[in-house]
Image (cartoon, rainbow, N blue to C red; front, top):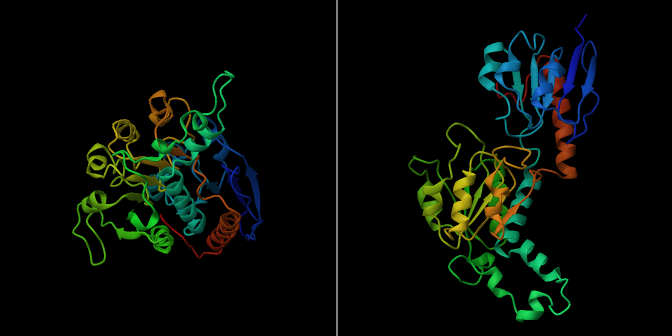
Amino acid sequence: MAKSHHIVDIEAVHCPISEFDIPGGYTLSAYKWTEQSDLASRIKHATIVLTTTIRIPAAVLSPEVTPNLRLIVIMASGTDCVDKEAAKARGITVCNCPGTNIDSVSEHAIGLYFAARRRLVGLHNTTVSVPEDITQDTEWKMHGGLNRMVRTADGEAPLTCEDETVGIIGYGSLGKRIHTLATSLGMDVRVAERKGEAPRPGRVSFEETLKSSTVVILCLPRTPQTTDLISTAELHLMSRQALLIHVGRGGIVDEQALLEALKGGVISGAAMDVYAIEPAGRGTTPLLGPDAAGLNLVMTPHLAWYSKKTLRNLEAATKTTVESWSGGNIINQVV
């Protein structure tokens, strides 16, 4: 008779999961969120763990802590939350759910572009702000115009889509979808080669992409090779008109270097959906500190992926991945 499984969902705040059809049956424990201090006790008896962004480090992948663990399913495309070397050493299968959020994240990236280029958040706040002093009025009323707020770092008027050159760094399914959307808006698109490699046909060197693009969109995974890929030197290669849009994974951008570049007018703005430490809060990123006030910086809380379509895709992919593994057919395996 097949052995029953114990499934633990350590990050159920994001996505519902379907009932599984597993030989021998299963039990399920679901937690909306799991702090690292609670992780070991919650997954101690698990044979299958479901996560999205919560880290599963080597310490909890030891046989002493999780003696029964056999499968980890990451309900996302990115896999950096799991210590894959430790899982491999234990023979624990790790799978992800690739391609489930492509439409949502690509559309969010374009939305971030418009928010940063047109400075929509700052314009809204300034337009609706009415001073308590009745002798004063809105800035718009007092000054007659606010076009200074949307100028680029070199003092020029903002570009339109047909004037933009978009450099895409990371050309998987997400990068290709962003390419399609950007092209449909009339943007000139170029695809970056990996840093340090000669460009293949149809690609532009990493450095030339940074130099020639007015919009740089990051949509690549975090690996040892991409950690702090964009730091001080890279930002200084970019045009003063340039925007940096980040919908990849946290840790690819050196956040302190980005703050300094924005303060110094090295680039015109940035829009971030992901951060080195998440959830972001007091003390986790300089982008939330007092020095960031008033900068052309749009920040969203790692929700580019969130849409009805993504939730349907994730629910279906998780169900299929777990059931296939239980039947001896591993899909979407990363370890």
